[in-house]
Length: 425
Image 1 (cartoon, rainbow, N blue to C red):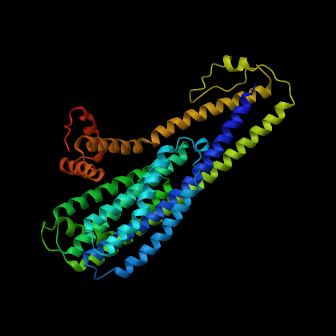
Image 2: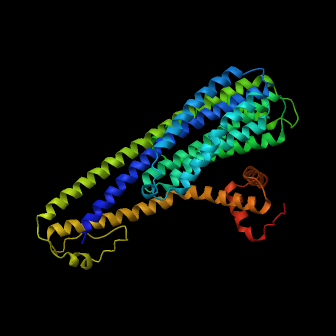
């Protein structure tokens, strides 16, 4: 019969395999962050190009497209490195499903670029199209965070996800403001979207700094340079307070784009630091777990040369419960020292698993909010026959009209599930 020690070693080997998968996933998350940053800039330049009726920004946009294509190839290589064997990949069906959807979006990207180049699409439609692709990529990060079983790595992934989402709201703010200035006219719907983007990015970044290391919090504060924020705040006020239909200075499209870009580039330095911390943590956890496995193997080698004794008295007599965070140490004189040592290892593992479960529950609270929003959106899509974009826009409008958070609206929608009217097609 296999011993408790053999199963402890199996647990460590399983952790090492899982950490290796998490390390590859973390590399993928970093690559996605770089691609999203490039697509955000491409979207902003596309809006400036469309807003100028194709008279400006064509060369800058073409150069950015080339950069985005290189980063897309990097993400696709990272996808290829993931182990998709069902026997080894574990519970990753949702992650792989999200990747499949993101790949569909990436394959459609050349057609989107053609439509922008030929000015077939409006700025609003272009913003929505890029946003859909970026959200598909961020959904991959979401599933990576949700499937991470190590609390420390999960915490970093959730912080990274929220920062990327906040940065995406900043990117949408840049694109929307660029289109408004380039068009030279204020628009009520666009102004409401701007307010939503500003509030949402601040909320996401707060979640990130709450979860991230103190070093990340300090870096974020340093990135908030007054010379970057003051021009941006001044132009925000112009965009948001101009009477709908009123004239905007088209000459401000370049300063607006530059001010937003400086802020987003500063955010990129924080994003890079988050990605580096994530990779470093994966490596540290791998090294620590490998050392633990080596120690267990040494214990197994020593115990093989010694007669085995019955350690049952230690298990029952010290009154410990493996499910509790704190337990008494063995040492009541029962059993051989080797058996006593193995029993302590087993108890340490039980305590460790309990602690990891508690920490994961805490870390995933923000992920659960996103799941609630997705469920509410799906409910509206089913009951009202809306598209995903229409359902999200409906909830966002409800949140703005009621001055509530999106999660509050989502919970209210779910609470009304049984009485929502079903509209016929």
